[in-house]
Length: 227
Image 1 (cartoon, rainbow, N blue to C red):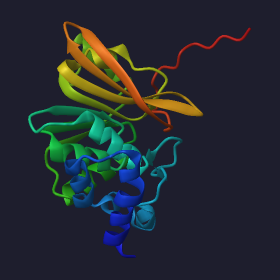
Image 2 (image 1 turned 120 degrees about the horizontal axis):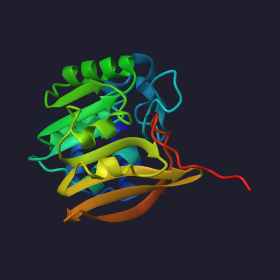
Image 3 (image 1 turned 90 degrees about the vertical axis):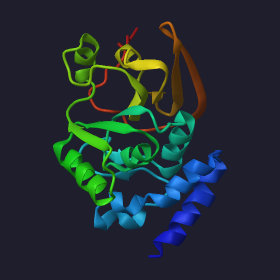
Image 4 (image 1 turned 135 degrees about the vertical axis):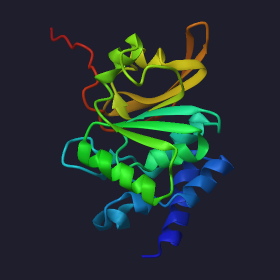
């Protein structure tokens, strides 16, 4: 397989038409080898316009290339910024973020995937991304109370999967000017949601595009009543 041609086609035929036009993002997608973040048996699927399963549990996947690219463009990560990702998967999104940020901490609930992400990042020469094994949802309350190492403020937070609603605990972890990206809602239509901390505890929310993504594990679902 000609990986370079497949990568070019992915960028030109999938990602550009999805309004990803930031030249820095497009250059980064050409630089970071997506296929290197997949097991050998799945590398031929690296450039497909689809989610790629990574594990045995529901929702363990690499998001579609155009979704990852659009999230990266929306966040506009800067070199001085500290990033938290929840849902490391194989480490690909963390690698993209790390090329633009000062530091990335990425959480992965599945120990096998966490180790895969560590190995992939090391092989790709990415040393400013740290993979932590743990339940990102369970650590939120601890982070807010200051009883967890994740306590503190981040410039950027990325949820690499969907949630029913944005947890307030995550918003409390954003610095003024910080941004959070999440895919929010229920199938068949979810909204890509960008929340910006505009200062003084106030937030601005935009939902510029629709997509769907598997649920992140263990995040709260709102109560549903049947009448």
